[in-house]
Image: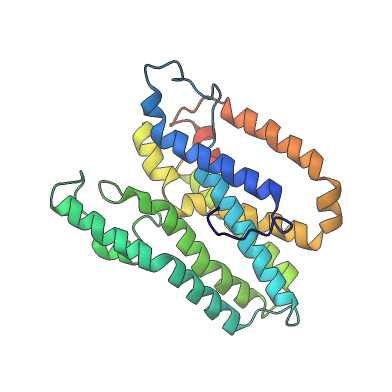
Length: 268
């Protein structure tokens, strides 16, 4: 109807379903207040995960899978040219729109049309995606937090993978990188978990900081590693892990989210 040709044979139903669910979670999280004082106020009547987390995992999975397919065509090694092409495509896809919206946000806040403060923020941090590396930011362009997480993944992942591939093969290098960036954010959350935060500051300090959230993407990277190198077990245990994932989701969703508890700070 819209002139878009879709190759349905190459579509992966599971990914499309997860994308749809993630979109619903994001929209619900931002717009659920519109249902207040209505019959649908509690819809969908069960806790939902953060949709951005799902997008992070999918992004890591798809990018890692693309890298593996690319290097397999040229002798199972990562070349500088591949990294440069990857960065070029990423920059062209993301940076023009990001900087445009950054300028628009700055002008609207400056004119008083949008709430926020520009006198207490460094615009250069937003230009360089360093507004939330290991420290919180607020009062201006909050939506950029997730893109900063993605950008640092796009920068670090190929560099670290390239460096490790000088000393070990792609399989081991990818495993080390993914495990490293799964463990380090957990250690960070353990270190700072003893501090008290109310709901607002928990959201700002933990949920919207690069070092605390980049592990979500590397869970996707690790999943792509398992699928590529252990495809037999990936297919064989797919149903078991599907139901295990549902169980873990229900356990986490129905755990009381008290912001100053150790469990909440480490897991979320």
